View 1: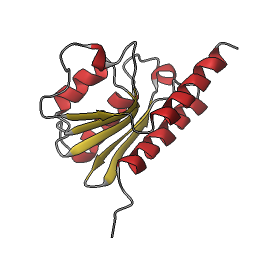
View 2 (view 1 turned 30 degrees about the vertical axis):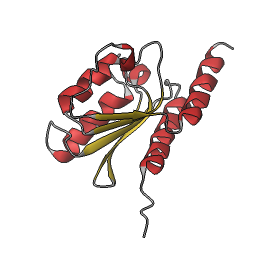
View 3 (view 1 turned 120 degrees about the horizontal axis):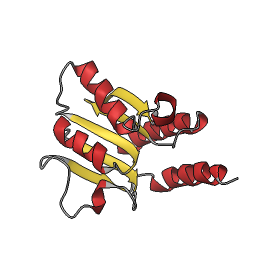
Length: 148
């Protein structure tokens, strides 16, 4: 039997988190952390509500996952996030030693991929593009609403 839990399923869960951020007037970025085909952390941006520039979805998800595991390292885990992590989040992911990062849309202005050298841990596998269009549509809608 084929498991219904695959990269697309988990990215859709991250997109649900991004929608929650959108609904509370936060930049719509969502993230989930998965271990053994189970979501152990769900998060979205909370920078406006917490007045905290570090309250990105990835940071919130890393913290929740570490608490769930009772460990500071996220080995054996995958982060699904709707927008390419920024340099700050990339650094946090480096220190978490997460196994895999899957992001939807590239962030040409602030994404960690702008760096010439990878910011992620050498053992971290990074893939992108999964459900990117869905993420981009939500982000565009958010920023278009800000211009009204």
